[in-house]
Image (cartoon, rainbow, N blue to C red; front, top):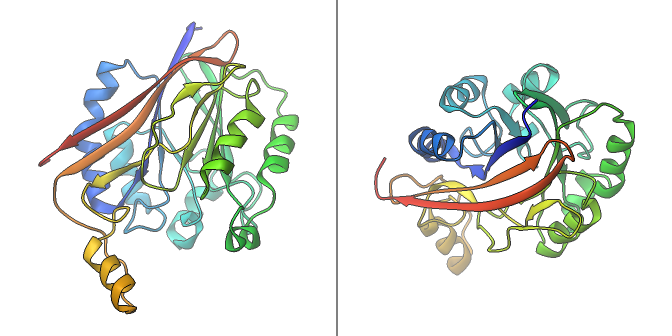
Length: 270
């Protein structure tokens, strides 16, 4: 068994531009960092909500191994079939009210051994509270049931508030290899190894068009805000583009992280 596991976690892939960015830029990082396992936040992959099987295969061909989930994951019917299959590496938040058992936790067989991956949804805002149960209790319950020997345990926390995303890192410190926050689509500058050996970042950011409102055409958001109009979101197209991720090194003998490195890269065209 390999002594170390190199994990790449990619931020929210936002629609077609996000998929194109990943296809264009991921191969370089897989080689540069000698990645063993690639995980990506997939709740926005297909037109901003959920992920179709065709888009999953497209990203798998680019090198993504596992797809974590968020509040939009279960809004696309085509995603539900992926979640139902225990052998398909697609997750929804384990504590979301309408999520079935098994949808929020899956394993991946890496060359270093079995990796456990868990998705969680934050509940600080009232609309989140109506959709999800307590994420701390949910992850406690899941970890307590797991008696298998895992070389790494990766937790994705899809949440709204920095305090919520930061605190759950400390809550799980020493019990999991990494707690990766996302949902903002804006990367934070705080990747670190917490005191007991868990890698953490409050928000890893997104992949897609750069000069946007979280991947949405900014003019629509400005008009809606200024003029109080009702307009549907449209995913922004064109460059420049952004790719945001973190690379985590896990000691497979302890299941704890030794390093976490933030990756932010921009390209005018792809």
